[in-house]
Amino acid sequence: MNYKTLGQFIIEKQADFPFAKGELSRLLRDICIAAKIVNREVNKAGLVEILGETGETNVQGEKVKKLDVFANEQFIAALKAGGEVCAIASEENDEIIPVDSEISKSARYVVAMDPLDGSSNIDVNVSVGTIFSIYRRTSLSGPGTLEDFLQRGTEQVAAGYIIYGSSCMLVYTTGKGVNGFTLDPSIGEFCLSHPNMQTPKAGKVYSINEGNYLHFPDGVKKYIKYCQEEDKATERPYSSRYIGSGVADIHRNLITGGIYIYPTTTKSPKGKLRLLYECNPLAFIIEQAGGKATTGGKRIMELPIQELHQRTPLFLGSSNMVDMAMEFMTRFSIEKVS
Ligand code: AHG
Ligand code: MN
Ligand code: MN
Image 1 (cartoon, protein in one colour):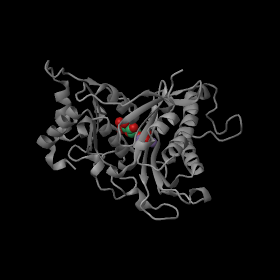
Image 2: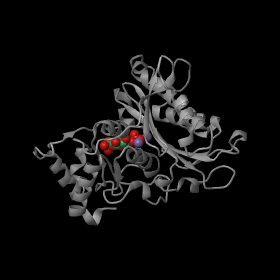
Image 3: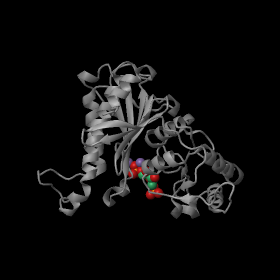
Image 4: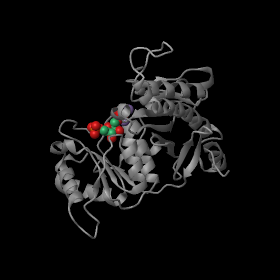
C-alpha cells in the first residue's frame, strides 16, 4: 500500500506551513470530519427521495433538513468542537458566529465558508461542493469579531474546497502550491491523489451562464463571441461547459484549463458571488495553481472588503484566457470594470 493520507502529508510538509505545529492538521481534520458526513448525506440524497423521506420527519423522527442547512450545521459543529477557531462566517448566517468556549480560548484562526456550493444541483444528482478560507485573527483575545473577517484575500493562510462528485475530493493550498486528496471510502481517509496541481496556461473551455447574455457587459458579450469564433492557431471555437456549481466548474477548469466567469449583470450590478467565502478562496487556489482571478479589471485577492456578504464579479482560470477576457473588458466595458 502506498497511500499517503492527508494527515501524513501535513506532518511531512509541516515546515512549509504558515501555521504553528499541529494547528493546520487539526483545522483540516475538523473540516474533513464535516465533509465526510456531508458526503455521506449527498451520497444517499437520491435514495432518501425515492423512499419518500423528504417530508417533515425522517424515520428517526428528526426533521429532514435541506442539505445546505445540514452542511452548515455540520461544519459549524466540527469547527467549534475542534477548538482552533474563535469565529466562523458562513453564507448561511447573516452575522458571524463568535466561538466562546473553554477549548477555543487560545484559538488563533477564523474560518469563512460556503458550506454547500451549487445548491440548485442538490436534488438532481449533480456535483456540489464546500468552500473554505482560513485567516489569522486580528483581534487579540476572546471570541472573534467581524473585523477578523474583513481582511483582503492576500491575508488568507489557507483555503480549499471539497467537491462531492463521482468521488469526494479535498483540494487546498497554504500558499505553497495546491494539492488534491481523494476520499477512499473503504478506509475513510483523504489520500493524496493530485500532488502539486497546476492549471494549463491556455485552456479551451469557457464557463458562464449564457442565459444571462443580454444582461452582460459588452466586454463579456464580445469575449463570448471571440470564444465561439473559428481560429486554428488558438484552437477556437472553445467548448462551453457550465454545471452551475462553481466548485465543480472551477475544479474541472483547474484540471483541463479554462475560464469561469460570473460577471456583473444588469440584474446583479455587483455580481452574484461572494468575495469572502467564494471568490477569495477560489482565487487563492487558482493563483497557487498558476492561474488568475480578477473582477475583469482588478485582482480579486487585493480587493478591500467592507462587509461579510460582499459580492464581486469573477473572472477565474487559465492565465491566458483571463488576460484575454480582461482585454475585452478594457476595450468594451472600461467604465464598468470594477
Ligand atoms: P450557492 O449554491 O452557494 O448559492 O452558489 C451558487 C453559485 C455558484 O456555485 C454557481 O456557479 C453559480 O452560483 C450559479 O449561478 P447561476 O444559477 O446564476 O448561473
Ligand atoms: Mn456558492
Ligand atoms: Mn452555498
